[in-house]
Image 1 (tube, rainbow, N blue to C red):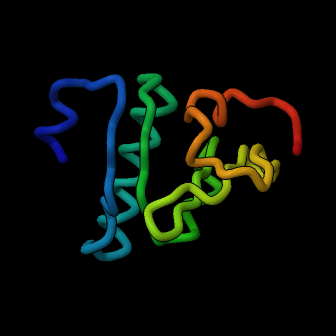
Image 2: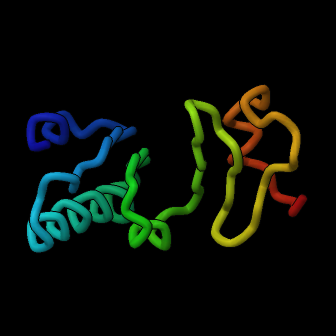
Length: 99
C-alpha cells in the first residue's frame, strides 16, 4: 500500500484493502484512504464485500456476475432497469435525476 501511495496518484484503486487485516489495522487503512480522498482530493475506487464501508462512498456500483447491475449516489438510485453495462460510466456518475 505504501509503495502505491508514495507516487501520490490521482486515482487509487483499492481491491479489498482490509480483507486480510484485523479490525484495528483495517480501520487504519480506511482512515488513510479517507485522508487521501478528503484532504488530498484523490479519487478512491474501493472494491469490498464489507457493507459497513458503504456510507463512506459517494457513488456505489453494484456488480453481479461481472456486470454493473445498479448504481447509487448515496440513497438515490441513478440508473434505470436498462442494461447499465451499455451506459458510459461517466454518464452514470454524473446523472443528477432520480430514475
